[in-house]
Image 1 (spheres, rainbow, N blue to C red):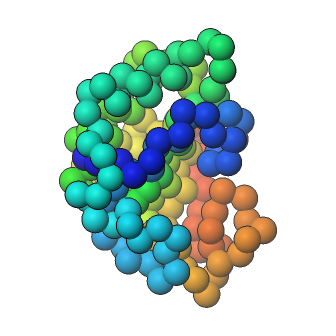
Image 2: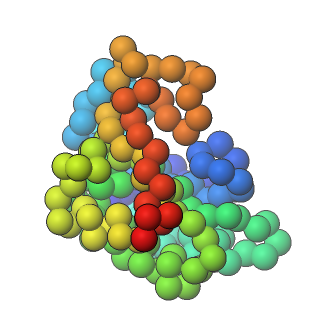
Length: 157
Ligand code: SF4
């Protein structure tokens, strides 16, 4: 998996202070996509074990306390990203159990494959659905268009 950008301290993408990873790879081709350079899974930088460790270290950092990890893109549930995203969310939940995970995907919750659902098992909040330009609304919080749904999965477990 490649990633497009990593923000070790972020107060925009999700609640509170967070670490945020924008991965490469997306097949949705939404009209009006804010970042088409993330579509190509080969763009960006390699998300290697060193980067995985950096995310864990940042979440454990007591000097800047993060509430959790945000995963966006591109699409973290892009099929080629799944094995490395699964490894990351498993590590976060095992090693940083007090941190929440928010994940943005262009797939809808009700159309996820079994492999994608394995990742979602570790996700606290899922924001799903493609960006639809005709439903775009800048007043929405944590969503770009009104068709997208914020699923508070952890509350239902
Ligand atoms: S899901 Fe996100 S990154 Fe992918 S095309 Fe749509 S807006 Fe762009």
